[in-house]
Length: 341
Image (cartoon, rainbow, N blue to C red; front, side, top):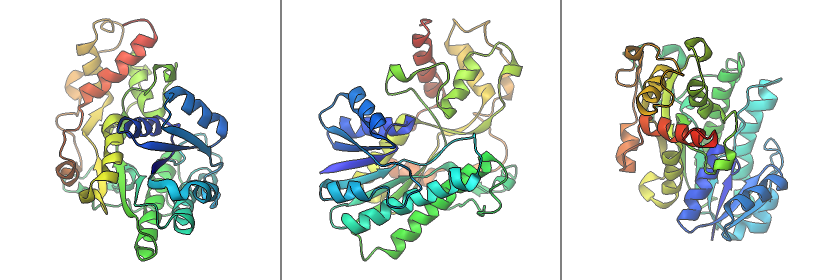
C-alpha cells in the first residue's frame, strides 16, 4: 500500500517524500505536470517512488484520475499542495479558490474512488489559520490549537499576505467540514498540521540557488546583507522543515494524533535573532554582515500575544529544533554551494 503526497515537488513536499521513503513506504508523488514529477523521481532515484500529474488544483476533478487508477493501492494521503505566491492579479483566482478547491477536490476523489482503501489523511494547513492578527500585540491574548483566524472571504482580500492567510484558513475549514459531514461514508481518519514559518535545508544540494524558497530566503537575505537596510524586517514564529515532515508522517501512524490540529512551532524570532546566530556561529561572515542591535532579538522574550502549542508538543513527544539549528543548517548548505565552507 502507498502514501499519496501532493505538493511533492515543493520545499516541504520533498522533505515529506524523503521521510516516507526513509520509513520504507511506497510513495506516489503528485506534481502539477509530468515533467516536474519525472524530475523528482530522478532526484530521489528510489524504486519506491513514482509520480503522477494532476494539473491545476482549482479543478475539482484534478485528483479523479489518480484515485481511479491507484485508489485501491493508496492507504495514506498527505495533502501538502496549496498555492503560495505573491505576484497576484486576483486573490480569488490565484490563492483562495485553488486552496479551497484543492482540498475539496482530493477529499471528494477519495470518497468516490478510494473510500474503502484510504485509512488516514493528513493535510498541511498553516499557523496563518490560527491567530487574529489584529490582536497580536495584546499580551492578554493566547493563541493555540483551538484558535481560528476570524478572517472572511471578503476581508482577507486586502493584500497578498492576508489573502494567503485566508486561503489556508478556508481550506482547513473546508476539510474539517467535509470530514464531519462524511464520517459515515469514508473510513479514513483526518488531522491537520499547522506549521509556522518553515526553515531548514533543501533535501538536495542541487536545489540551492541564488534565491531560495520564501521562508528560507529570509535567512539567505540576512547572510548576504552588508548593512541593516538590506534586511527586510520580520518577526514571527518558526519551525524546522524536518520536524514538520516528521509530524506529517507520525500523524499517519499514531492514533493519538488523529482528529487533531497539530500546531508546529518552536517559538518566536526576529531577523535580529538570525543575525545573532550568524555572527556567533560563522567566523567567515563576521565583519561582512551587520551586527545590528543584539539585545533587540525576541527569541527569548517575544512581545505581544502568547502563542503556545503545549498540547501538540505533548502529543508528539519529541523536542522541536531550535532557531540556531535551523539557521545553521540553512547557512551551511548555502555556504557550501558558494564554496565558502
